[in-house]
Image (cartoon, rainbow, N blue to C red; front, side, top):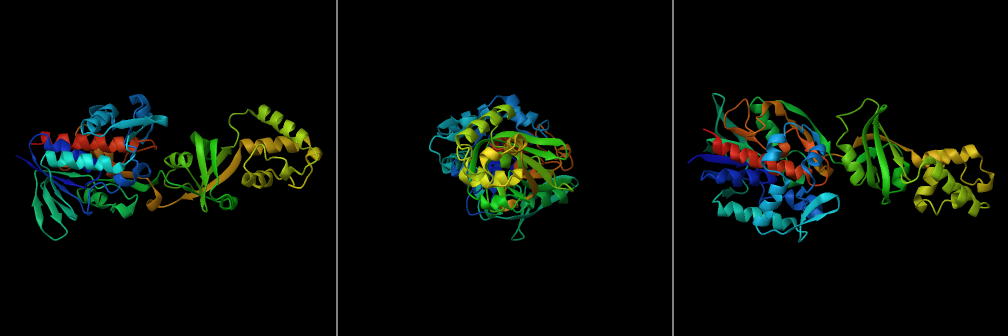
Amino acid sequence: MKRILIIGGGAAGMMAAIAAAENHNQVILLEQNEKLGKKLFITGKGRCNLTNACEMEELIANIVTNHKFLYSSLYGFDNQAVMRFFETLGVPLKTERGNRVFPVSDHASDIIRALERELHRRKVEIRLRTRVSGLCIGQKKITGVYLADNTRLEADAVVVATGGLSYPSTGSTGDGYRFAREAGHTIVGCRPSLVPMVTKEPWCKDLMGLTLKNVTFTLYNGKKILFHGFGELLFTHFGISGPLVLSASAYLGTGSETGYEARLDLKPALTTEQLDERLQRDFFRYQNRQLCNAMDDLLPKKMIPVVIAESGIPSAKKVNGLTRQERLTLVQTLKSLPLHIIGTRDYPEAIVTAGGIHVKEIHPQTMESKLVKGLYFAGEVLDTDALTGGFNLQIAWSTGYAAGCGTALHD
């Protein structure tokens, strides 16, 4: 019987422990928090969007970084397998808009409880409030871990599933990166991802709380389009947020010299010509009004002064006095409202961490280190990340399962 230590009691760590215990190994799960699944508890606004029920090609298309590295683990334990796994554990699931999968109860706690029951059933020893301070490595082979109280735990294999740096309140301290670095691994620059953006425009603050639905958001780095998407956007006191913006943030690099520019199409369902015709109809109806009082049918009230100011047309100008060129400028502003992105919010507001352990130093089938025998990595600590919609949790389940199975194969 082998002794396998799993560091981290999140999604990847719990799955790794369950998979490792399948082969009658002695598995010990070490978690520094007072309970398991602390970050899992708050995912999907507490509802736990645990995977996405889309086809495999679409799932892979939603992975932003190193999707090829994940082929083996994703096909080894795919989204259908994840759904079967939880339903077998007694958690009925439902699929919502965008193929997002949730527990029918809408409670993340049901997912965590099911995992805990399975850990107990497989006789995994769970040690809470137990912090690992370092790895024991001898002759390029893992031999155990050091705990914060200076005790040493011997092990035949160790899985590091400590998460990234996002939501530090859940215990994401970045320890896994330190362990990996000490073992000789390269860490690709980390940054917050799936995170709100900070804008240069002061008018965003004036629109704080306003949600725009059915708009398109295009993010540019110079002339290059980094992201183009349709959906929902929210204005905040620092800039912009909402599902569209969070997804777009995954494509921001570690920083552009000049910042990034975004364009907002407020009326994507209409072509430029159709929007011009719509404006002409509205302006005919309100021909004696000032421009600021003639756009209520087209835009939310808070949005009107912003669009007019960006177009450069005096807001008090009578609609019947607008030139064709001014009207076309207004159309252009509605179709391509500029926003200048000067940064993102920090890790406490980021859903995931981009960057992490360089995947070229990891065996993709087993998640074992190519540098240290018996050392495995799973979940967010790896340099992989995806868009919102259950894809990041799928990566956690798949890599956790691969690592857990890998330890069982380990000699």
